[in-house]
Length: 234
Image (cartoon, rainbow, N blue to C red; front, side):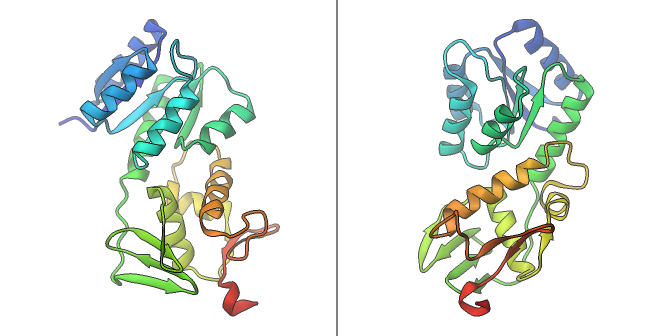
């Protein structure tokens, strides 16, 4: 039985065929396309387990595709594979919702390992005996995996839910970037540690009234991040 269905979006045919060959040899089902518009159609029709996405495509920029996928399928894992390896390119990809960013040229075995790592992380089941967690203006529903602030729904991705759940479980406890990586992304995470900062920034934009001056999800300089209930602690 295949480990998952991977959609490979890459316009350079030799590279696409090499990726597809290695994925199939590693027990993945593979779909291929060299066009961004076709990729968006395949996502709706075929429901892939993960999208492997190049940036330089002939019709739509890969960053735009990543953004579109995140809007319509917030829980679908995305791994960007690109020859554009500058830090700003990586940060942009992560900001737009990619789960990992791999720079060409790459080792095919590492690519497969990182795909498996992303699939493990995104398929992790969150177990919680209580039906909800409440603190200050926030209510976290475990069964529906929804967050409410002052009774208003805050739309979260699966990764953002995992983060806020961890912070609620370890309320007022500073957590380092490495602790967050191990808990949410897994101890065998191969990607860029900056993904933590990207996800924290995106989470702040959703839960803070002023993300530039957070009162709940705070930076503890020299340590990491800490979730506090400002209504109680200050």
